[in-house]
Length: 291
Ligand SMILES: Nc1ncnc2c1ncn2[C@@H]1O[C@H](COP(=O)(O)OP(=O)(O)OP(=O)(O)O)[C@@H](O)[C@H]1O
Ligand SMILES: [Mg+2]
Image (cartoon, rainbow, N blue to C red; front, side):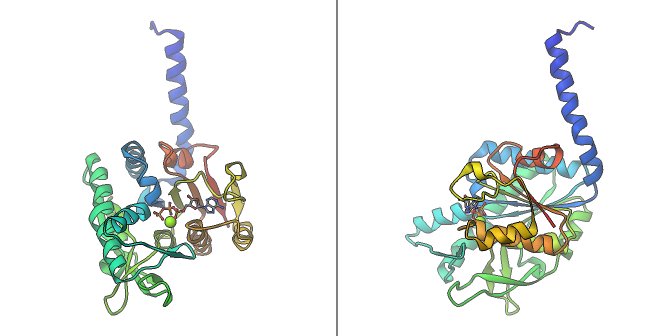
């Protein structure tokens, strides 16, 4: 053996990283992890998308049943701007008239979903794109008159996802819901992810967004909360420290814990390999919520 001391050091560091992952792989192999990939994280460019896809495929190859649910906020904004429409938000949810709903469907089903599926499938025929309307997976009713075609989930049927997971596939879910009358709805992807995580008895629900986690002061990055219990997060929500798109995310996180999901993680999906760092290392990198 004629390795330089520096080479030996580098090799041993690599081996250490791989062995640190071993207990986590043993613990989580065979469990279900639902990942919500936020539109804000997706829009950060090809590098962060590539690293996200590698992480998802790696989780699949170590035996974790991965379901991806995606958003598309900035992409929907871009299309609406091109069409000369504007959007308003109430309680962090996009007010959705008939024209906005058309744009939401176009972006989620025609742009973001096939992008993620095709990137995953660069690694093998794993990704299958579905929407919450497929197999009546996400059954909705209108949330309020103000919100228009925003759906409130009344029931989820995860049997379509189960059959894909049994085949070893990675379902990629667009957050469109359907009413009993066949009307399609725009449903916040965080809430869809939480419902599906509950229905699939998921071990974890991971939100990848464009902020490093939940802050106790929305405008102060130093106020990141690393670990908290559901009752503490409920208090934070009531204190108005949580605003905009973080409102449905926190509500979704609490709902998932209420449905028996063991832990919910919120992290910055723009950070390369954020998902692997959170799932497979001792420290974790974002906010972890547990019951
Ligand atoms: N207390 C808080 N801590 C952290 N972020 C907060 C807080 N309150 C509000 N926010 C905002 O919430 C945003 C994340 O929600 P947002 O809906 O914009 O993203 P997303 O859900 O990842 O994307 P998409 O809606 O497209 O799926 C952050 O960019 C941040 O500005
Ligand atoms: Mg959002």
